[in-house]
Image 1 (cartoon, each protein chain N blue to C red):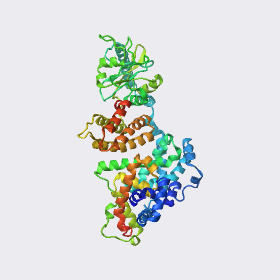
Image 2: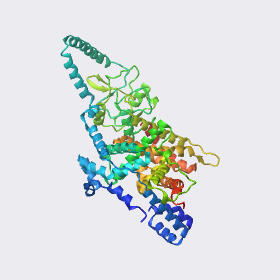
Image 3: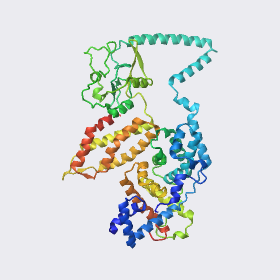
Image 4: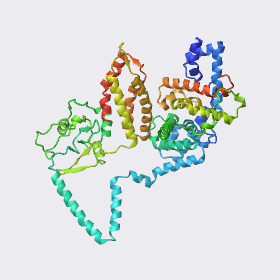
Length: 209
Length: 367
């Protein structure tokens, strides 16, 4: 009732127009086939998970070309490490965990290089907290920019948890597995992230916040 | 259910993460309470807004092409060449060099003379080497004991095993804490008559051998349970061999193998975890009998995040030894991170007892 089915479906089934064979194969079968050297099976895994993985990485790093590079790195690492995957049913969680590592490594490098994390285009989406604007008057594009800017301003842990829960619809258990955070920590981070996001995009949500 | 309780749990309820009983109570309260129901509606409204968030991202066919190319590149012969054994690469270089020499007879004959000289010199050195007294060595085939370094040091170590190997074995139950007496089934590498004759009485086991060489004072420990076939596998990569009485004998220094960046990161992490555990062990009670562990708690949280990243990295790389070490650290980090900032003596004692009983610090030292 409470979960948005559209997002959940996009997670499980991948992008529209994904390879037709995707729906015919269970995750376990695909993993077993890749392990036997079937390259086509890995293509099916890619088709199924590339979109959510790319979105997740984009939400973490905020840069489209970089997100593509990191998604590529994620799938290459996944291919190389597939032999070590113990629970085949948790392929998606495992992929997200790799994606999280790849994204965090990148963020760490960027922090080292630049002193702080910059998200591209952030400056062009200044928030106007004191001038509430009804959501209905906003173009979708502008709302996207506002959400993206607000996300970029969350600290890394909160952004990670918020993205996984609110945007990717993962369960607390899955988030704990992906991030390695305790459920207590992730609940706290999620609550704070929601509050922060609400404060930042509240004016765009119809003035009720 | 009161409104306070309902609002405290409302996000969990919205996320479908409350148990059936709580969900029932929440549903009952929400149907009767307008304010709480409005809070739930607000969450739904927010979620709908986020559902409209369009990143304008499409997975282009080029992305798969790049992934596929990268995978293929990793399997390509020229990439694999980096991973080929030293011998096969040396053989190829040698063949190439010989073929180029065939065109230059004068140079070839000079090199042949030089080669003969080097061979004669090596044979002479090998002969002298069997009588050299000061190299700490162990037998390749029969010995089961080995030595692992506890800290970075320049000393030569017997056993032909790197510190990574020793650390991994330590977590399989092979650690003997420094200072403990080693009792083993003749497992310790005994020096043979042909090796290292010294003016002093011959040491009986590796500990005394190390004591003689000064390595024991530097924190080296003896680890039992070593299989000879494992050793042979590892010795293939060992950098130095000498012939002693017709047998191959390995001489390995603790720091001969350079660490790659990932291993360095793990080593730094393990070192910081050690510092944390020592800090907990040495923490002193403040007035009022509580322990201020706020620093340890903060450090532990930081290390916990790092630990998780490294665990997954190790798992992805298939580095089981490192994964094992990190798995072993994790429960301590979790417990310390979850301690109150002013911990009671019982809470601190409980962690200290576990640190002692599991000998975790000693185990981390040999990593």
